[in-house]
Amino acid sequence: MKPVRTIVRSLYGSQLYGTARPDSDTDWKSVHLPSGKGILLGRHEDQFDNNDPSKPNGAGDADEESHSLRKFLGMAAAGEMLAIELLFAEGSAVEVHDPLWHEVRALTPRIVTRDCLGFVGYCQRQAAAYSIKGSRLLAARDTADFLSGLRDRHGPDARLRDHDAEIRAFCEGRLHVAVEFLNGGAKEQDFLVLCDRKYPFSSTVDHTLMHVGAVLKSYGRRAETAAENGNVDLKATMHALRVASQAVELLNTGHITFPRQDAEHLMAIRAGAFGKEQLAEMLQSALIAIDRAAVSSALPYEADHAAIDDLVLRAHRSQIAAG
Image (tube, rainbow, N blue to C red; front, side):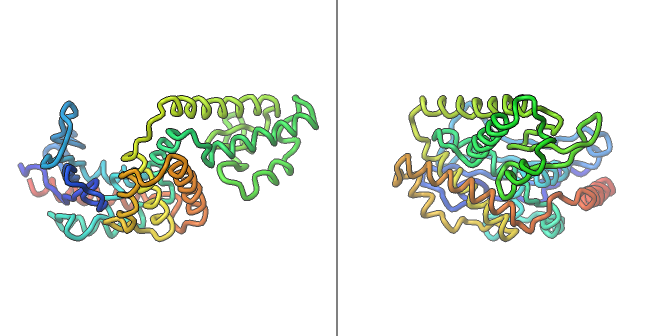
């Protein structure tokens, strides 16, 4: 029986981004194929590592983490940062152990989509630490104001569907708010979609406004909690802005460059060269830049899952045949 087969091994983290300091540790990420026997029996590890979360890492320490090819491609198709970054790592940072990796990279344009959820989520979480509004909070506030106006003019029992044209005009050209035709369960209908939350056109204006108000309150609670913490995590902020610039580059060009071209600027952020208000503005601008890039991106909306399945199937057959 052939043991686990490493396909690629790459530097990760600060060593890949170009932001390493003398006290930085070394992270390695790998992609592997399980043994043929493990594949046939369904008894194989999709992930393994040597990390010890109870011990802090420092200079000279090295963490190793590996994902199976099947899991890795699924992560990439879902827009997870780790997998997407590995697809674009190159040069001296990468050790190619198997020609299969070249097939994986050739499939990149059919794997990576404009739905960079991992990138966006990371940036949003860090932005919340500054108690800044962010583009989603602004969209929720604008929508609440719009619905309040509808209620004042037409009464709380008016239904969204009775004001279709006005709602569509409000949504036109805005980020995070739109009208979509979806399957609502009992029947298909239009929905008002705000920050990934869906409100059927059969709902009353008052009922919809109540739910949008709950969204606003949840944003406010997170912001207040973050504000109470007071401290600025410069390392986390640096990484959030790095991730944002990567997302914009990916959405605009279909590629991510490593080491990062703005590494010097990122290191200045971590060193405390900018104040809290400046960093908050940078994060807010970064979120808006991602949203705009996503709207105009040429990347596909969905990954080619059939192509992914075909590659995994061929790789598994090869591994099983090898014994």
